[in-house]
Each structure stands twice: as C-alpha cells, then as structure tokens.
Amino acid sequence: MLSRTAAHAYWMARYMERAENAARMLNIMHHMSLLPKIAREGVREWNAPLNITGTLSEFCGRYPEVNATNVLHFMTFDRDNPFGIFESVFRARENARSIREKITTEMWESLNATWLDMKKAREEHKSDRDYGRFFEWIKERSHLFRGVTHGTILRDDTFLFVRLGTFVERADSTARILDVKYHILLPSLQDVGGAVDYYQWVALLRSVSAFESYRKVYRDVIVPIRVAEMLVLREDMPRSLHACLDEILEILTEVNGPSGTEARRKAGELHARLHFGEIREIFSQGLHEYLTDFLKRITALSQEIHARYFVAVERRACSEGDVPENNGLFRSPAIFGGAGGGQS
Image 1 (cartoon, helix red, strand yellow):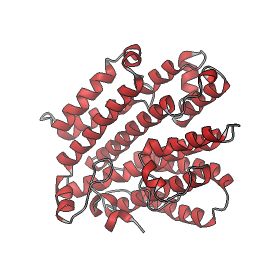
Image 2: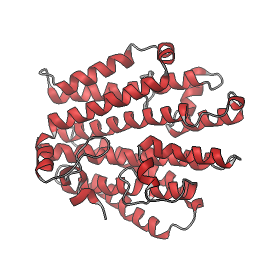
Image 3: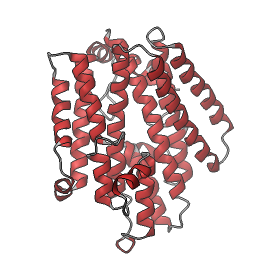
Image 4: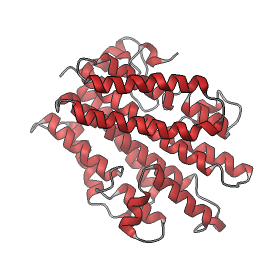
C-alpha cells in the first residue's frame, strides 16, 4: 500500500472524528453556558475548549475577548483553526477526494454532501441559538459516514488505516476532555458535590455518550473517581482510553504481521498501562499527571505511526519547506488534502 494512500485514509478518518468530538464538546459547553454564573466563571468555562485543543494563544491573538460568541465561531466556522469543525470537515473531504479510487462511492457522497451542506449552514448562520441544532447535525453526519464506511468498504489496508485514524483521534480527545473538566472546570469548594458539580460531570458523560452506560454499570450517584474509571480503564466503554488502545493495538498488529514495529511496541506499552491499571493508583499519583503522561505517549505513538507508515509523505513535506503543527505532525498537501493545509 502506498504511504500516500495510507496517509490520506488515516487523516480522512481523524478529521471526521475531530469534527464530531468538537461538536460534542461545544454542544455541552453551549448548554452549560445557560446556567447562571458570575462573569469570571463564564470566562473560565469558555477557556476550556481552547485549552482542550491547545489553541488558546492563537485565539487570543485574533479575537478581542474570550466569550461564548467568539469561541463558538472560532471552534465552529473559522477557516484558520485546524481543530475547528468547518476546517476539519473540509480536510476530511479533501483527503477523501485524493483517494476516490480507494474508497466507496457512498463514502465520498456522504462526506461531500456534509461539506456542501456545511458551507450553506455557515453562510446562513445568524445567531448563537443556531449552534445546538448544528452540533447535533454534525454528530449525525459523522455517525452516517462511519456507518457507511463499515458497511461498504473492502476490509483491506485502507480500511485499517481509516480505523487507526479514528481511534488515535478519539483517544486523544477523550483524555483532553476529561483532563480539562477535572482541572479547569472544577467548581469552587462550596460547590463540590453540589448541583453545579453534578451537572458538569453529567455534561462530561453526555459529551462522550456515556451517561446511560454509567447509570447502567454503577447504579449510583455520579462521582469523579467512577467517571474517570469509566472513561480511562473500562474496555467495554467505546470511547474510553482502554477501548481505543484495544483497537489501535489490534490494527497495528494486523498491519504489521508477526514482524512488529516500534509503533506497535509503543501501543502495546500504553495498552498494558491501561489494561492492568487501577483507578485508585491513578488518583493517588494524580489524574491530571496521568492524563498528561497519556497525551504525551499518544502523541509519540502518532508521530511513530507517521515515521513508520507515512515517511515518504513526511520527507516530501520537509523538502517543500512545510513545518510541523502544534502536535508535531507535518502540514503537507498529501496529508491535509490541499496546498498550504487547505487554508483559504
């Protein structure tokens, strides 16, 4: 399989997963902003999605104030934000266009229709009140694309790299969302265990479609240590870190065969930490420290995947003078689907 084809398939899936995860996060933030809060707490709350994606400094350099309207626009329709929904869908579509012969007609039509409808939504957008409906629509379109992919594509290497991109992005996103809730959105001491604290943990669970699963598994009040256990260690929770690493390790093993690579070793090491981990040990060392270490390791794994499978693309990017993005990945036409990373 050509490294170019693998890169396009991988990033097509990552960007569509990124758009869905951004929609999940912003939809919850939008609902939470309706709670009565003093101005300072409101600013801290809207810092959260910027901290999750590591784009706070970029945002502050272009927007005068951190508030709901500015952050929602930046994270939804801003063409210069590679972590935003609009640009993520555009890049997913451009990567799909580059490998039309390797994906099915249904996959292409699903992504292309999403892109065309989203351009229309951007032009017609008038009020912050429109965002809730838009975020639900993005989630539905992502679900449709994933379902069409699983239902139509040949189970070959292209399919494996589509799955690999999905789960690498999902693991990174789940860790960031949990870390930001635990350290940035923590209420004041008098609110711990109160209505605001409870609502925030419910919002977190809903953002990863885990609220009903939590009630089914624990049948008890929502407490931080159990939320963390579900989203970090439970392998039967589809968006947990453990479940994502189960998939990543399986995919890399299938791609590599018996020979093995450094990427598979890194994935296996990270998987073992999750498979044999205990939530009380994680809390004793600090959840924030654990998640920070996980994000470093998943980034290192992502970079190793690039070095192992997309090396031809990266070498071309270096020769053309492209530079790494914040996460260390190259902004190259072959990966991002258009010259200059698809910027307008």
